[in-house]
Length: 421
Length: 186
Image 1 (cartoon, rainbow over the protein chains, first blue to last red):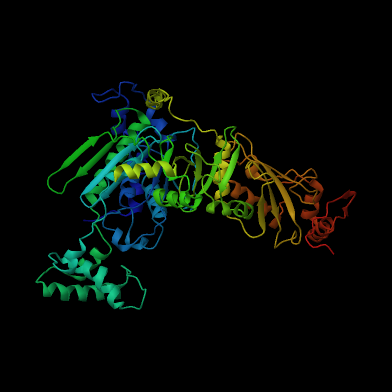
Image 2: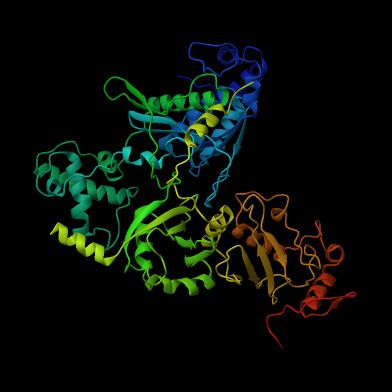
């Protein structure tokens, strides 16, 4: 197959962008009603120009990002921003079709933006540079989020109105846990080639430390993978298991799931369609979670993912943590860090008049001196009673969390224990 | 034309029924946001944030001791007042001393773009402090509050340096006397 170069394509299409036929496929949807139109939709010739002013942010310029950028640009969106912290790798080229061999090593977002602007000159693709700082969203504006993901032949797409519909955290437990094989299978009865590789990485490696003590497995190191491959091969022979190759070994070690271009294309097109619907209201939105699977035949299902009423991210209902009145503030801190994956939380509370009291914060020297001793004080000593509300901030959270203390007195606990025994 | 926000409104209406059991937070949004900002401060050793009243997070001072540039050796104290509209309006920052600087006037008002026209709610206290540090590394003559100082900086860098040194010792520049800001008392 010959692929036209970017230059010839753009030369052919320069004039097309503005020709009346260029957007006829989009006009058909926007300028007349259809059977699936949203009841509130009013067809109009003004909608297409409106798309030009709509601002879209694409996060990631990889397998899905390339598809999405192409889809949205061809749908008439003209102001697209894209961000990606990654550079192009040889292994991306089979599906991340905006990149060519000569682009290897260059930033993904930059190359993707250039390609699209060349191909569709009217479309302006802005690059966003990666910034580690947490950006806070203005709470008075709700910006809808369309999220898509793929894993091999499986994928999903969904529409999120932050604070109104289920957020990512709400449905986090829908994602399957990472595959782990039972230790006894690995140690005594391997049946699959995966078991042999896992046996090497989990057990054999630590016994032998082939590259020195405390050297951890690096999935990108050829020497490491070669060593694991050879040991796994020996073990497989002992148990008469076949199918172990170098590539297979690396796949298991790095837990590689091959990316499938067609899945990316489908999930990206579902996502792009939702973005188009959000922008134009021409068709009723997906509500709100679509799963796609074509491992055996084709299966899709759309359902309404529900908000978790006590979601620690999007719910305004305070979280509750249960403690004893003799518990120390240190315990509160440890519980918060462990339960909500925080990094360095700051804790404050307010008394009945709304007067703030800082319980723990170590970002300034002054507060460190004042509040560090609090860790060794009990909740009683700190005057924190049952039902006290704490405000917890952390750099991993866009918004402060509200935490309620549920304090049981030592007496209560003892009597409960008695009942149970 | 397009009823873009009706879904939003409709959903809003259905969710704001109001739960009487839902406790409301006593802490104001400005305090919540400042708490977050303060907890995430990452300042160089030349900066120190001190709250005169540790229970009032909205008012604090920044002590800045530059370790490079023309203002090295001085110690500058800024007062920060965070308004109730924060982060929709910027914090109010003033230099508490009378100093000779093209972007700071004799009343202590600071001319820094992110404190006025370029303020955005995504900016933080940390960002403002870095902005102030930058003003002392590179005083900017194009956007002056103290016009005389800016003129001197533009026309004669050496005189400007001498004036800065003179003012930091508590001396006069022209007819204006400045506060002594040196850290070492000799």
